[in-house]
Image (cartoon, rainbow, N blue to C red; front, side, top):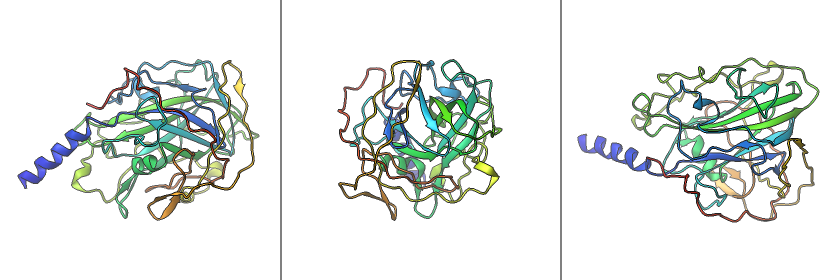
Length: 328
């Protein structure tokens, strides 16, 4: 028994030397906006203190000039990678950094100046753990080349918002302060006809270090995992249906906005897929370079998959920035 326990601790320690990651690019209805509107973290190191202001949009981040225009009821894809490269041969977040993927939105007066601490955040998507398959949300994220697609609530009011994408790594979460939080914020402007202003939670404040989904030893076996935070907001107050399986989708790269004006949402027709989808669990997953609607894990998510055009040019992997490190 001692040998078995020691082996598990060794595996947890070994996994901690790999896998740091950041949320980087954004797609709008299948169109790549690159890093137009992301508050790009200066390093890929995690946040561990849930009471710190860093838990909002990550440490050392600052507002940027770009704003991405998104549609109420449309699809948005957030994209994570370990380094400053979109090479799908590398896992989005490696080193067995198992845990949930959670996405929030917060309405703000001006997305280019808001720091995310004064408003409230409502949850729009979440994936956790599937005991039947033994897969965590990060497993699905890695199978989709770091992409997680969600549907913007159709009834929310027009205006500026921040999107907060997060992965919580639980490989060292057996002790308080061991969970690792990887998050980035995106600056967007929602276009629609709705008027709903969902209530939510505050960051810091939404999480406690002793929450059952944050203080947990995942090596003891997990039957039911409790995802941190509030329930997912559903337009109109209806119950959220189970999310569909990943759908092949991709697109041509859209120009990156360089001004403070809202980046327009491009539209295009969807051609037939040119390659076989990658198998994820028992359903089809998209090719590595395409955004995909993730399979929901252990909780309902409101999503409607939309096929989008195939990306015509895969980004070239760039040298790893010095500030991007492996996990310690």
